[in-house]
Length: 152
Image (cartoon, rainbow, N blue to C red; front, side, top):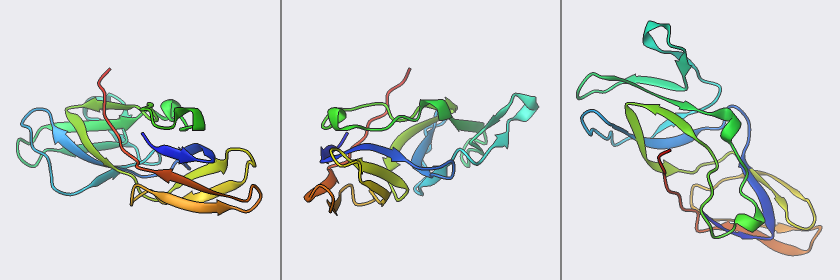
């Protein structure tokens, strides 16, 4: 969820966009301290030839092999009409892992809501971003970025 000011179509850009997550092992409950990232560009084979995933890792505590895969066709922009509401922007297929935290970083883009001015390099690490739309002669921004995970 975020508050949008005069921008729309906020979205991650490119297959190399990195989703920074903290992931919990469902088997033992271990949550590593460090942020881990996954991207569409990365694909690791699953054991037994069962396909591939964006990340496959063995839990350091219980040694279980877990995986998480980005479902690329679920990536959806956050638009002006979504402002101040939660909206699913991406879905992950999780096997043995559960995302418990998300840290937005660089790699987002947006457009001026009225002007269509492109803002190709948005960094949301501070959970806020501001700029000025010369064409529309108005300030633009993405504020108070928050997230939630839901199970389907």
